[in-house]
Image (cartoon, rainbow, N blue to C red; front, side, top):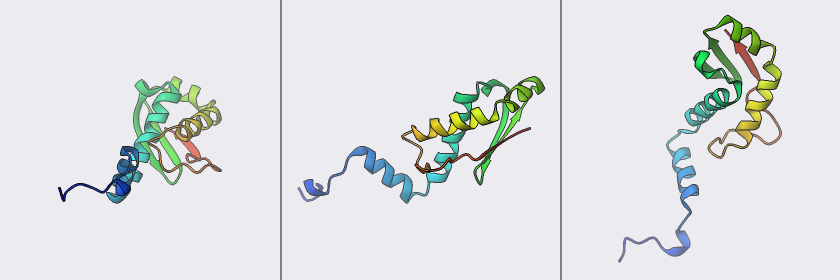
Length: 109
């Protein structure tokens, strides 16, 4: 049975998936989607969010309601803290450094 992988070369499924994501250069796209998921989970404004864009550590959010946007504006620091905490604990997020925040700013439009 020459097609079998020797036992010493076998790897766990989580490591295999991680290697696949890196080799296929899917890391940045997956991380961006995890940032968007963090926004939806933490902000509570997913139903009012009509657009999300993430670049260079800045999360740009287009909000359909001016009242919700105003409310979120005053909670930006808390939301950023919660987003970064969410990402820190997210197993699928690979871009998080242990000593800094990944999402550095929040722009509401």
